[in-house]
Picture 1 (tube, one colour):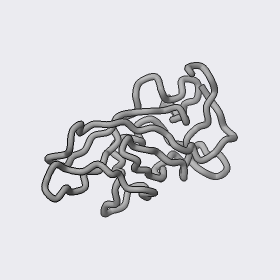
Picture 2: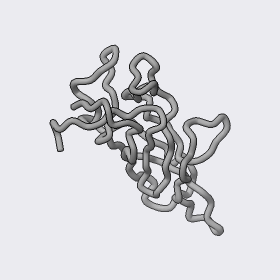
Picture 3: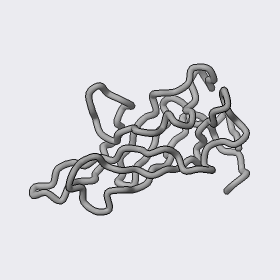
Picture 4: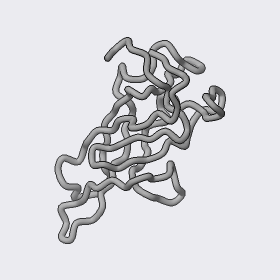
Length: 136
């Protein structure tokens, strides 16, 4: 619900893709912390894969189940796109950059050729990682 305070997302919080993949937030700003955990800023959520990779980005809690149309199917994990406009904080910023909230959402895509349709999906925050700092 717009205008209602929601928890800020911090390190250790999790994002969920539309294919049940889940990743833990790792890349955060150390300039603002809640309980010793840095907050996730707008822009830091883009390009995160819902699959293990080298070097590891955020830890994969549960891999994305999206596959290709190949026979046999191959994994085609989601990668986050930037948050949807209007879903990050409007009142809580750090250096003019919005903090992401538990209500933040976005879309995903897969860079893998022959991904089963539709190649795009959505992502959302499944756990912000804290409940002390709330913002709108």
